[in-house]
Length: 228
Image (tube, rainbow, N blue to C red):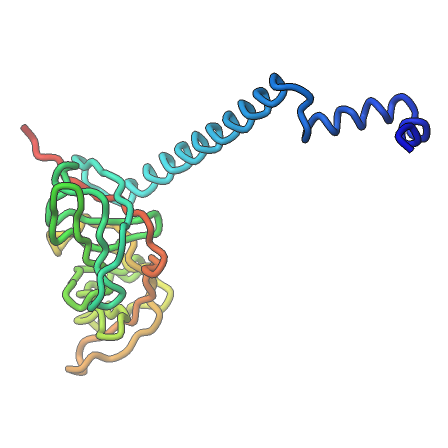
């Protein structure tokens, strides 16, 4: 029975079987070391590709801003606090990394929020889904201006929009330069619905956020450089 396989497969089959077996069962320690090294190199190459992809992603994220003197650091979300809509984000960057209150946080999709507190190696980021946050915004086509806030249920609403500006559903909502806090041109979301505001003169826009706040794991913290 031991020689039946090679007899049926022939010499070529025996050689092929031997090579196939050596891939999974290295015949000696040198082959085992070679296999381990190959796996290590594959993992290192995968990490390098991931770093290159992230580098390109972060460059595209920075292209949202129109601030000439801005640097950025990457912050990983450590955990989410309780008590607010979708929770504040605690990230692994603090004043030791140049992150201070007032720093704006984004992802590749758009605006996340703003840093409100900073410790040595951690910071608190309050997302725009928090009722405490207000953002001056503008729509991309009609140029409608308004103030973005979050409802108690976490829905984004753009208020005090002039009816004469005639905003459209499907328009992209961006940060405007009039707020003085957020760099202009950062994507916030998309106009989902247009309705009349409470006074009857203004419009209120329901905005679908660009960022999936339940799945944010990493942010880019924008740091404005101070000229020396």
